[in-house]
Image (cartoon, rainbow, N blue to C red; front, side, top):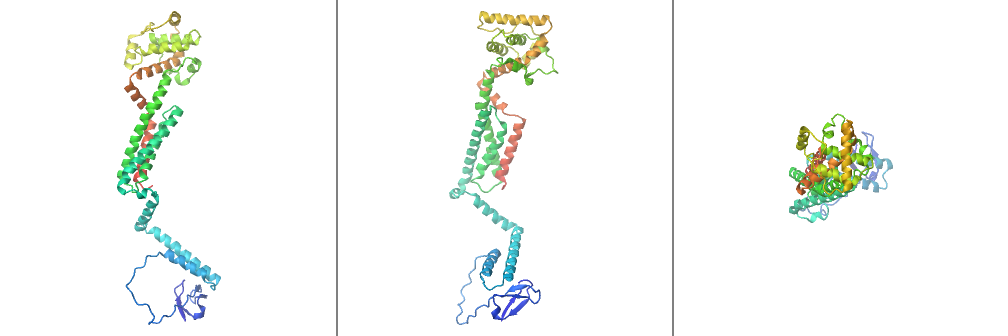
Length: 399
């Protein structure tokens, strides 16, 4: 007689030995259960002597259920419906086991995290001692930032613009490089990532200032803007604001001399390259490039004689300058000076910008300071703060 319990309701059942391995229905729940094989009888004399208790390794219920499925599938005489019923029960038990492990929290979560951390490490880095991991992470972080700065510089050179938004990616790359050999993330490690990112951004901006901004402004300062004068005069970004008075420009001798020369270029009576050099010289050596000097000149009033003479003029050049003075006088008599000043102001503003760049870049220290400051802006600060925040999250939080 084989005695066993129903796997559905727990009812105790008893069947003859010849039913071993077959499916029988429970007399209580009417569900089929597989009759287990009877345990072999071992005489007491032949029994194995009792030894010291050995603690068997822990086996999860999932592994037991999998072995049970294999045993059921290997039994040839089990009825098909009983086999399917046993497999369904095993599947339900496995789902319950997984849900129990997820709700376990604490110990299970910690073990899964340690397993994840181990898989994150590269096999080569497993050979590195723990004491070397943090310095190695700093080196990796700085190296990653350096590579990103190189990409930034190449893109900025190609575009002719500092591309400030790329400052967002420098601390992120540095944080990933720092995190690579350092597995445990802490608050201090996040602060270290932020420091490396900020240092890398500052270095990147210094490189942009020297190799992108300075060459860009030097090219702008020597651009022959009067060669294509109609395009300059029609540029809407260079027009004089309609809300402002043009009188300070129209009553200034230096400005009106430059406008008279520009008018000669527009009429085809002067060489645009020479006129650009003359006007930049007048503006650079006058008192118009400083704000305080400019307002002093406005208060004191302007004349129609230039404050600065131009050296090295030939007779033909002197004649061009004389024609410019004649035009200014004619405009004054016809009371059209303000109209001409407003008309040719776009070209004058380009020349003022060139004169400012040349005057600023005469001092090497001031040149790099100005170039560095030109890489900063409101949106640039947003990119920087966002990049540092992401770098902190990458290094301090397990993401």
